[in-house]
Length: 223
Length: 148
Image (cartoon, rainbow over all chains, first blue to last red; front, side, top):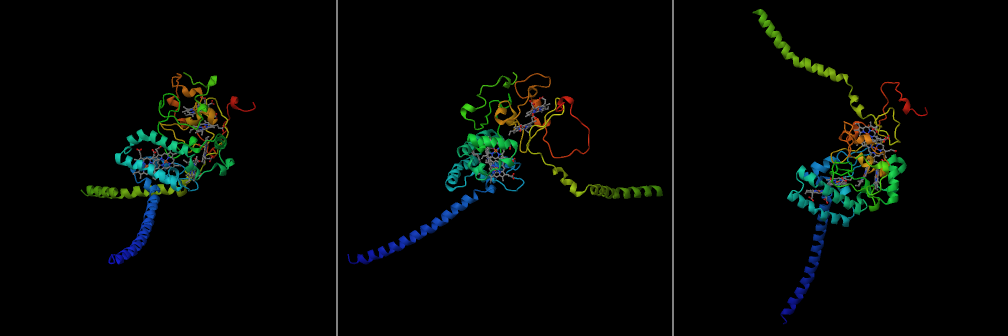
C-alpha cells in the first residue's frame, strides 16, 4: 500500500499535465480546424469556385455575363455568391449544407449536358424563386434598398412600380425574375406558345391574380 | 527564243511582286479609316423612359418609349409580353398589344399571338439621342397632326 502512494501521486501530477496538455492541444486543434473551416467556407464562396463546374460555367455563367450585374457603368459587380449565398454566418452554413445536393448532382450528372440542364432548369429556377421569396429577397437587399432609392432618378416605369411594390409589400424577386440568367419555358397566356409550361408568379395575392379577375368586355382576345 | 525568255522573266517578276502590291493596297485602304472611327458605334445613348411618342402615320408601329436593355425574346419567354400581353397589361400599366397582333398573314384571326408578331423589335424600335444626318421636310399625315 505504501508503495502505491507515490505512484498515485505521480498519476495525479500526470493527470494535471495530461489535462493541461490535452486542453491546450484541443484548443490548438480547434483554432486550426476553425480557421481551416472558415478558409474552406471562404474559398467556396467565390465565383471561381462556382464556375469550376462546367454545369455552372457553360450555362448560367455565360448568360449572366451579358447582364448588368456583370458589366455596367460603375463597374460594381454582383457575383454568384452575392445573390445566392447569405452573408450572415448561420444562414450561410445552412445554405452550404443544402448545397451538398449540388455535389450529389455533380456526381450523378443530373445536369451535365445542355439537354439535361434545360429539362431541369424550370425546377432549379423555382427552387431559387421560393428561396428568395421566403427571405424577402434578402440577398438583393444586401446591395439594394427601397429606402435609399431616389425614385426621381429612376425611369417612369420603375418609379411607378416601386411605389406600388412598397405599398403592396412586394419583394424584388416578384418582378425581377430572369435578372441574371435566361428563363425556362414560361406559359405567358399568349396562346399555344409554351402551353402548360410553368407560369411566372408576380407576387399577386391569390385573389388578386389578374387571370382570376372578371375581364372587361373588350379584354378577351379573339377566338 | 530571246522573246520567250524575256516573257518568262517578266511573268516571274510580276508574280513575285503581286503579294507586295496587294499588301500595299491593303495598307493604303486601312490608312483611310481613322482609328477613332471604331468608337462611333457606341456614341449614342438610348433615351430615358418617357410617355408614349406621337405616331406619324396610320399603321405605324409605335416607337418604344422606354429602355429595352436586357429584354430578351426567346422561344421560352418573351420579356415584352411580360408587360404588354392581355393577361398582364393592367397590372403593369403598359399598352396591350392590339388585335392585329393576333392575325396571321392571310388576315385570319388566331387565338394566340401571331408568330408574325412574336419578335416585337422587328417592327418596334427604341429611340436614341441621335440627330438625323440629313435635314428633311417629313410631316405627319394630317389625321395625326395635333390641333388641326
